[in-house]
Image (cartoon, rainbow, N blue to C red):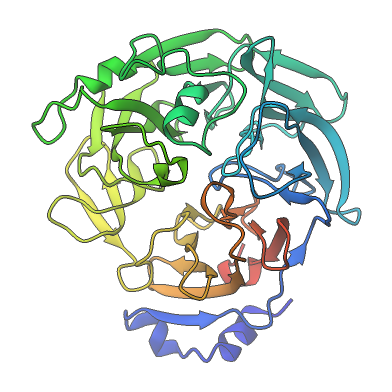
Length: 421
């Protein structure tokens, strides 16, 4: 590992660049990713906004699959594994799932604050459920509903109807159980719920019908096909953040279902009250909470340019972040233990099918490219492999999924010398 001074010297940086303000870009010197899984089977984790690594930094979670290049069917099982990062990346199978997709796998993640319990979604007896596995006892308990995101205090989950998502945005929901309301544009029976992670008690908060009757830009949007997607809980575990999406018709070409919909970003409290349209532009995409009041999101606000914006919840306040360096949509998070000064991000493939992985330092407007990774053409559409970069809980390493060596595998990179953790 190089020290900070050596890193700055090798990157060709001078003190004036640290204070003068203009954005600059460097490539992290001699930094090679470490592959933590091996083929021939494909391995990946899933989404960028969940804990893959336990609080100690020793164990990483992952998924294993035996095929590529098609949508999951109802009989396709996903193997769930625990990777020992201190023992040669040894893989231990801890379970399986029949409820998964290529982009977010089965919502596999560590329960926040726990060193012993992980959770993922599964299917049984004609319904979707979630499993909580204890890594030391090997025991598994089942909760009655699937999860989308967990509260940072580890007390509850937030969820929605995954078969509805699969019906309207294939690849983000699950096969195996048809949407019982597929003939209804905005059913009142499904929507947003919370579930107690200890008891499984579930509370229905908002229905699709509730949001469908909320005008958008002064216009009635109820005569569309509606669904909820992409949920997160605020750092203080008091507010929920989600995307409300709709499209005028269901597309026969499912590969085209990635486009043609409108999105608005909504916040609401954990009882379903105090609802606020945090981004009414219709363009919200990837986001993360910065703190319990601010949301860091890729969008194109009304009358403004597309980019990453810091929006204050329940106000009209917003600020563009990284205009010169983060001008492409990606999967953005904050590096832990850096006072939200460092952003971890990626891009989609460019015209040469290269995906850029990088860090961005907000105060100094510095961008550090960690690598560029080739994405073979056969990984496209629903079964593409975005990097979905995520940090460990110490903020010392980046973990990501990639196909640059020809198969879907997981990798890690040490960034501690860059961000100072």
